[in-house]
Every structure is written in C-alpha cells, then in structure tokens.
Image (cartoon, rainbow, N blue to C red; front, side, top):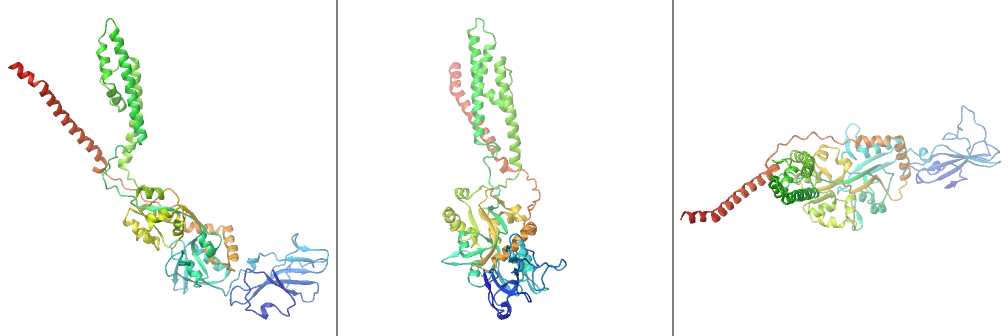
Length: 534
C-alpha cells in the first residue's frame, strides 16, 4: 500500500491521466477543513489506460481521544464520498487516536469502469457465446451463457466492448512457440479478454490468467449407431451370455448322467431279481434315452411315458422346473432382441475404438482436446485414431457432426451437456457411457491483468445471488432433449435368418441320413434277399 501525503492538491487534479492500476492500493492523505486532529485517506486509481483518475473514501484518522459523534440523521461527513462507519473491533485505535475504515468492499467502491473499452475475442457457439449486430442499438449483441454473463457485468460496471473472432477460428493451441486462436489474439494485442468457454490446461495456464470458474463440462465420445443392415448369425444366441449357455449345457449333461445312473441301477435290480417283471425293458429304454429325456424336460416338450419310480420322477421334475424358468427368460429376451432396434455404440472408451480398428476419431483443432491427446498417456490414440486421417481435425462441431452423420465409423469428442440439448445430438447420435474428460470454463485474461480481481469479485456476487446458476440452467438445462418414440420395426429376414439356416441344415441332414440308411439297408439286406430267392 502506498500513501501519498503533503500534496497541495489531490492527485486527481494534479495529474488526472496518471496510470494507477485498478487493483493497486494508492491512497492520499487529506486534512479535514477546520480540524487539525482529523484526516481522510482517499484511495486513488485509474479504471483504465487514458481514463481519468477516480478516488473514494478509504478511512478516517482521528488524532483526538475519540472520534466525534455524528448526528443520527446524517451519519456521513459532508466531505466523505463513501458512507461513514463507526469504529469496530478491527479498527486500529488507542486512547489518543483511531483509524476507521469505510465499510464498503474495495471493488464495490471501484465498480465504475466508465470510459473503459474492452476488445473481446470469442468464437460463435449457439449456447455458449454468440455475437450478432443489432441495427436498432447499432452495436454487437452478445448472447449465449458467456454472453449474458458478460452483459450482466457490463451493466454492473459501465464499460463498453467490441467483439472479434480469431482468423483461424480456434480456441488456442501452442505450435512452435506461438499460440493460435483466442489465446493468439490475446498475445498478439488484438484483444483484451477472452469471453468464451476457455478450458483450463497446464500449458494455457502458463500463457493466460483465468477468471473464476463459470461452468463445468464433461467430454464424451459421440457417434451414430451402426445400422442393422447385415444378417445376424447370433440372433438366437444373444439372449444368453456364453457363460449361461455353457452352464445350461453342463446342467443338461449332469442331469442326463444322473437319470441314466438311476435307470441303470433299477435295471440291474430287475435283472438280479428271481422273477423279473415287465419293467426291465422300460428301464432299458429310460437308460438309452436319458439324454433325450432331459432335453425334452428342459425345453418343456415332456415325454410320452411317465417314469415309474419316484427318483426318476424327481430328476425329471427338477429338469422340467429349471426349463420353465430358462424358457420364459429366453423367450422374453429373444422377443426384445428381435423387435427392438439396438442403438448402442459398439465401444465405451478409446481403448475399445482402438481394439475394434475401424473407427476414426474427430476433435476440434486448437481446443483443449488437442492438448489432451498430446499427453503421453493418450498419444497412442492421437497417432492411431486422429492424425492418420485428413478429416479428423475440424474447426467446429458443425463440421464434426456433418461428418459423423455421413459415416457411422466416424466418432467425435464433444461436451456431453451441450451435445444432448438438441434433436441431432440426443436422438441421432449416441454417447459412450464412459466420460473422457472433465473441465472448467472461464474467462481468459493476459498474464498479470489488473482486471482479474475486480471481475472475480463480481462473478462471485453473481454466484452467491443465484443469478449465475439461473443463466446456466437457461442455456444448459438439466433436462435433455426428449426424443420421439421410435416406430415399431417389422421383423424381416435379417432378424430370423438364423432360424431358416437351422431349418435348412435340419432338412439337409435328414436327407443325408435317409440316403445313408437306404444305402446301409441295401448293402446289408438286399443281397441276402437275392441269394435266398436264387
């Protein structure tokens, strides 16, 4: 803090164009007229380069035993430009003097930025930040979430602004020691502040200073679900996982062995009996048909003959009840799989895309994503999914979406909260379930800018009042776009193709077995018949 004393007149009169940054603490001491024991401290600052100095009351210094009592109806001294505040416990005072500070916060006293003009650099984005010229007001209008926040700050602090867009249309990435896009405008002196969704990265933090966080977004991978145009060979096996199919097979085998063992035991009991009954042949039949009996029980087909002993009936009943549950679950799942159009993506992560090997990945050029993929942990995906293709680095999400609409093998990375707010992002595209990146969005200032603290002060006010959250929900509501109900798709050959293949294989196998049996019959029996007749 700098204190200037002994001047014949105020700094604002002696040198009104003196450049004193708005975030500095320069004060001048002025003696109260007619009183030798009371002095005022006035803080002095300049709202901006070329703008006249302004001053405000900072504190009052009383040299007497105690400060004079102010009238109740007039608590502010006529010479004080800020409301008078009685001494508090934090005031520096002794028996002979006291220092009473103004109760208004520093940047509330300095809120008036009249005469300051900011050159904004931004990129048009429908919901985040978009500018257009209004012929009625004859100036650029700033809309979107960041635009409305900036307009609120403009009304609060009385500054003016103009808007430009970077020539390359990028957010900003470092290349060969220089910066592109928004950050390049800031470094090149073409802009004073970045008003856009400027994500935070380590390298950017070395080039610009960020404001307080305005919004938090997450990034996911988006793509158009593949069309079900090819014939499916797994239509009738998809309802159950491989592990469940193996478990059912083992259960049928084990139950068949148990049924066979019980029938064998009863058969031998009958054979050892002195007077075998007519049940011996039936036990032989149960033993030879054990596997088919269990198959019939599990598939709910039943059997023509009821087992005569309780143990065989119990095994058959267990298999039948297991079959009731399995068939019900399989039928319900099969109907869903055949009639409901599957729209899930075949991948959930970058590793899945790389493993599948047929997709390419699009990102915004000069965005936080480009720096993200240049990280050592993700560089393999940059080299395999992005750089080998000419259409994966785009300047806007509009380009990325257009490419993804044409090609289901083209995926792109986008902000989940924004992409799901319209019909294309919510209904045409699907997102991978795994979040790729979480990031904060802020304003960007040149390194060491004098305006960072005052803007952070008023952004905090917007956050505390709830206005920031209201603006956020206006532009990025929690409820995403509601897609219309999908029409019921009639079953076609591609859904039941496997069943016809199995039917054809069964017919072919039957014909082959019939021919084989006929050949065997002719070979074994036909020559004997000729010999006997001869």
